[in-house]
Amino acid sequence: MLWVLMTTYNRREQTVECFKSLLGAYRGSMVIVDVDAGSIDGTGIYLRKCMEHAKKSRRYGNRDISLKILHCKKNVYWNQGMRYAMSYAAKHAKPGDDILLINDDVVFYEDSIDTLIKRRRRYRAAAVVGAVCSECGEQTYGGVRALSKFFAKFEVIPPANKPVICDTFNCNCLLMSVECMRQNGNLDRNYIHSMGDYDYGLRMKRKGLKVISSAGYVGTCEANPIEDSWQDTELPIFERVMKKETPKGLPAKDWFYFVKKNYGVLSAIYHSVTPYVRIVLGI
Image 1 (cartoon, rainbow, N blue to C red):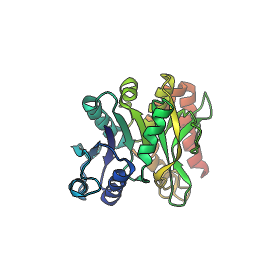
Image 2: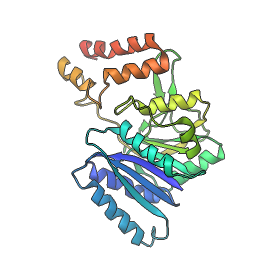
Image 3: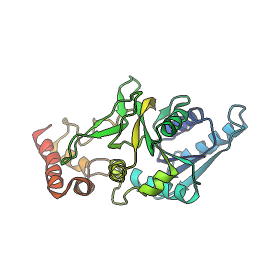
Image 4: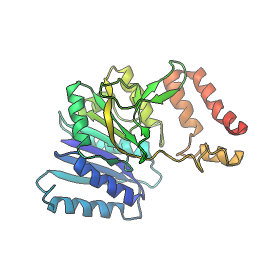
């Protein structure tokens, strides 16, 4: 059984498109667990309609596919929502099951998840990171390589036929065994939105769990826009600082905690200062 875990909030069109692409990306039985943070655009209703349609179709009707929607508070962001989904899967999944963590803005290619499962088993990996690209074909997210032992510096690993060991990853698409999830535990509760996936991957590395990259792109997913974010150099200094401290920016508390946990207190102090220096210098 494949357990697909995701969080949603008011992105109905993207979520439904992701859901439909999943049905073609994997041919076996699966449970889709969606943690919804109070969507008011009908996301849950449309997902249920898609599920009903899939069960009645000739193409998907003979498969064991189910949808579980878990509701949570509006102020729950990605990391906390995925913690909820992973807790649910940990309680109900059986030995030998696979766990797939995804973002609901990924559109998967045909048979891409089947390919990931075969790759994980072939190379006896605990997890495989699915690389994704933009509509233009440029890589946006995937497996990640650490560039330093002392500083939080990373680069994304391009897909390659030969499996490359990942130091950590983006969780836009992460396939792992249920045994891997139980051994590595849940996402760290100290993160609100981002950084939980990088932290989770670094924990896997410390535990000796083998994580490899995908052979090719598993789907499309556009990169988060820089425009109107804390990294937008066209914005005034004060506005950039305010946006940095939002859950979807680079909040100081979460960022300091991440760097201190994984690289030590001196590195955490350095990395805590540098974003503000960038903002003041307009870079």
